[in-house]
Length: 102
Image (cartoon, rainbow, N blue to C red; front, side, top):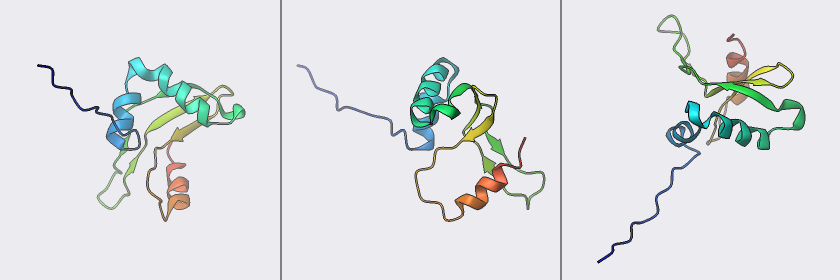
């Protein structure tokens, strides 16, 4: 007797799902292709680096930042790509804060 298994999918809009599918070295080319379909031609990604993405601050009162992907474009620009599912009230403020990291 055969029992069919229900289909299971990973939600790419969750932190776990996005990092599980795109956050590994073997899937680096897949990640670059995916992001390049979303970006305009003048911001095409040439390389991505996924390091320990958490910056916890130097003291207890410092803010915490979690970066998803460090990118370098074909023109040499460097930028951070972050997966964001929910609306963020202070998105512009957080973007300025993230821009202060090397």
